[in-house]
Length: 102
Image (cartoon, rainbow, N blue to C red; front, side, top):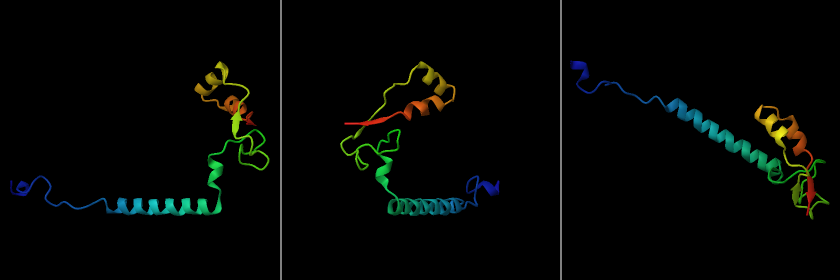
């Protein structure tokens, strides 16, 4: 068997170059998008709690003295059952009742 003298595959070549180039383009696009978001947006809004009226707790004007978010009701068995069944409406309704407190 003359064709197997150098191993089972004698004509090997690199096939990952297109995938590597696509990955580099993706990473560059990620950095461009993130840079644009930081330059034109406000990253602090991602880590701030929001009450039911859309006020940022501890950050919005007039709410600096109220840094914490309080939910007056904890999720009950019915809410947890709905979430496990894939229905998130009752959870969204409960989470939309938050109040900024000190």
